[in-house]
Length: 267
Image (cartoon, rainbow, N blue to C red):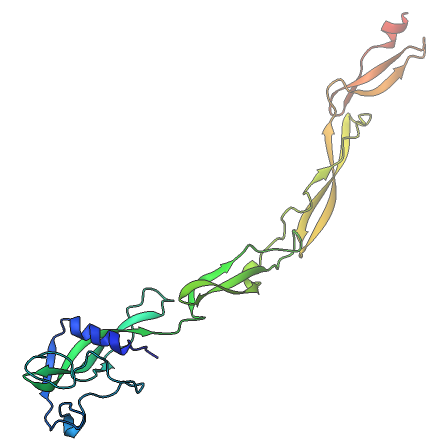
C-alpha cells in the first residue's frame, strides 16, 4: 500500500510549494463551540489528525484579517495515479501525484482549495526477478559423459537492491556431445621393435582412445615403418673361411650384403 507523508511534513510541503489552485470553495457556517470557524454543514474546521492527536500547531483555529493564506484545517489528499518514478526494478520508494483538499484562510473565512502535490509512496519488491540467472561452469563426472550440472542463483530483489537469491542446480544447459573426441590421453604407442630382419621394416603397437556412448573406448592398431638406412637386417657367414659380415637395409624390402666372402676369404 502507498505510504502517506507525515501530517507535519505534508503541511510544510503545502505551505512552501507553489501549487496551482484548481478550485476554491468557501465554507460557510457559524463558528463552532471551540472557537473555530464554521465548516461544511456546520462541521468543525479544525479536525483531529487521523490518529486522534490534536491538530498540528501550524493550523490556526480562527480565520481573520491577519492570517490570510494560513491553514485552517487538515488537508485531505487523494492519489490520482499509480505509485511510480522508481529508480530501478528493485527500488521500493517512489512518488505519486495527489490532489489535496486544503483549508486556508481567505478574506477572514476558511475556504477549501484544491491543490496538486506529489507525495512519497512505497511498494514491496522482495523476491521480484531483477536479472538473468548467475551460473557457474558445468561440471562432469568424466571426459565422455554427456550430462553434467552447474550451480545457479536467481537474481532477485532484496531490501530494495538486486542480488543473488538461493542457489539451485541446473542440468539442461550442460548437455553435450562427446562421441569421437579424444579421452584419457588420446593415442599412445610403444617403441618400434627394431626388428629389421623381415623386409627391412620395424613395427610398433598404438592404442587410440576415443569417447563413445558416454565412455572412453580404447582401440589397438599396428604401425610399420622402413628401417633406417644401413640398419642391420642379417648376417652372412662365409663357408670357405668362416668370415662374418652384416647384411644392411638400403630401402624397404632391400636387404643387401655389406661385403662379400670372396673379398674376405680370397681365392
